[in-house]
Image (cartoon, rainbow, N blue to C red; front, side, top):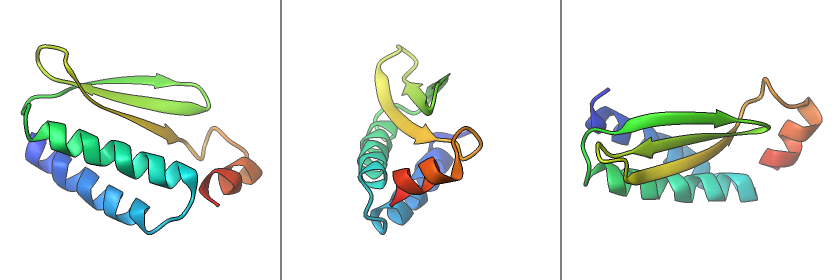
Length: 88
């Protein structure tokens, strides 16, 4: 996917997250802002994915310089109670 599309997608996601008040939403929006800024410097990111309860999406430049790491949580991997705890 071209970096411009990634930047647009993550800009919209960050904007939505900034309307939420949880610590997770705040942290994720800040991580996305950093990633978007780095996308504008390096145009061909690689993507790595690690998972536990939290999933870590790591984006790197062609020379493997980190561009961003987004710590996310899949609703499929946690209970409804834990999901509400994370986002409240």
